[in-house]
Length: 242
Ligand SMILES: [Zn+2]
Image (tube, rainbow, N blue to C red; front, side, top):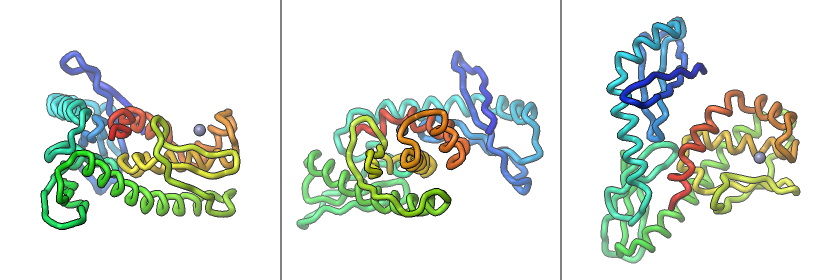
């Protein structure tokens, strides 16, 4: 996927062009919550034409990139109050805390919102409840993606052992005994980021290092992983923040 950039208001803004089948006639520009700019273009369109079209919308893009930066900065100190930003599978949601009588607290995902129905507004309890919710979403998502990806890898003869483990600075790891550990915070990132971490760890089953051989293998299992890793790295601070 070609990467290009332009200058606007003292900023250099990078974007990535993703070619789509020709039935999409128009250019579509998306600014992801992490500030990543994606330009979907019809297959036959050439890069200079695309670049000119992107420049025409430079002001709009800059405004959205700034907005995502502002939102990310805002999201850092968490108080677990309504209105705060939460991430789930690469999308931004607004936390809604709804005080409700009853014993149990519940977490519900609705359009644009993660709603915690709770008998108490105690931030610590809300934090714990959300952590449990993320963990169960992570268990589902990782299981599904692991089996899809493991099926595609011919040298992998069986589904590896894996577990969910909270880690401070890592998305995943692979033990010498071949057990894959995945960080529940990873479910806050987009699916391709989840896939990247799974592919990274699965390749360690074959190569327990980061040698050129390892990276060749990773390139076969997940072509284009570098761009996905860059995006995941740029979000690390916010996604690992509880
Ligand atoms: Zn590694």
